[in-house]
Image (cartoon, rainbow, N blue to C red; front, side, top):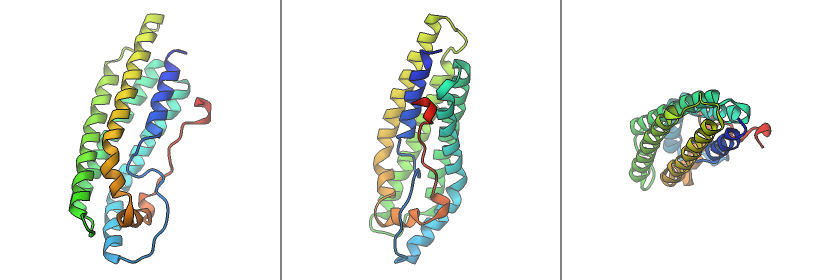
Length: 199
């Protein structure tokens, strides 16, 4: 088992460092634009359950990474990737429904964020398929090594998905749009970090 744990911890660390739409949103701004704040409130009200689902899924990967057996790790990662995929897809739909934020380049910000979330959703669904194909039952040294290498590839692909999704989501969470979103309690979420036992 020792061979698989470090790799899954890296997977958890990669996930915890990713730019997921919401993690650790903080800060305040003036109520200078009621229209923008109303838009942000409407959006956050729609996506709160999805944010919670995404955070919970990531916490599951991190907690299982510490001392999970291969079969537990496979099950937790598969379910978590599916949950994050579903959440990203739902957030993209909510953003489409909310319409563009009432700011300069609002339509571009909305369009780019939806494209990134849609791509991320597909990417996480693909990661689930990768994990599902791993053999977690072979507990021989060769089997554990193959499982560990499979997880390592999943971790690399996860990093690529997160890089692709960084740009437009950062734009969504910066400037006056980001300020408006950060004021909404529904859009705030505890940040994800690896558990002390996984260090």
